[in-house]
Image (cartoon, rainbow, N blue to C red; front, side):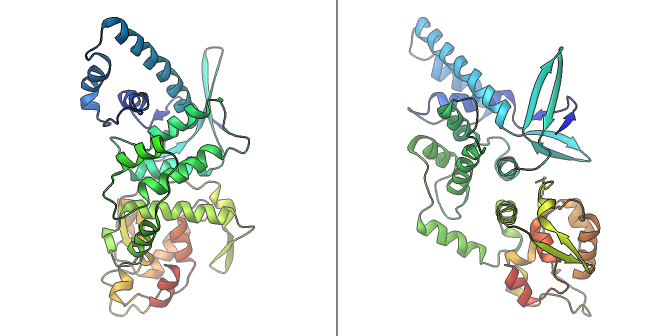
Length: 340
């Protein structure tokens, strides 16, 4: 753990927290839109409609009691953000007050619950974060003040929630409706057709049209798989790099630019490249990164990108997917297909 300053920020505004709480409050009757511009209108509708003042006052007190609990779970288990070297990092903090001073600590190592929340924060609508409502509701239902002993109860719930609400490609049911269904009708699973559609989608040559969510998701799946292994080493410059310890410091940061590993327009004399047009636009030949990093990589040949990646990633990985790609000395149609 490390002590941090009082520059910690919430991932949502207080009006948004009020709306998520209201969504829980009315869940048995209806669903509401998370829209700060409609905050007063929504509260007017649900608390000051065709009811007398006494009943309105009672409902308001019920809501405030619920809000107190929601805020407690939100502060305890939902990620916060802190600025660090030109980027926001996410963590679940522990806050203690002693002698009038607030001391905050965050976990030294990344865990799955923190990582998955960070992925959803970056990949889902910043003005809504509908996934938060069922997660907070789950905590209220448990209402024991603590996660289970191994700390996996909320993480496992969030994994199922994420799969059902975001792991689809053709469904007409939007995440807003899916999160409400998941919250009110039980822990739903994708049906076989939806799973097949996902696999087919990831097999397509979509290039930069791939949803950013799937790159974030790939990082989580790879992180989760490698953490479960005894040992996994990668090779770079005749050295073996043990991957598992690097995962303890792995963070998901904002990434909004899709880069081709083998350039779209390579130099004519470049032999280390993907030549098949479909494979070049496949998920295996793509990586999600920041705009600044994309500019650095630009149209550089594979070997230069590889050297640049490992020069800056020997202590902390930026991308697990890219690490597995750049382990390869060569990059061609066959190797790219195997990676995909």
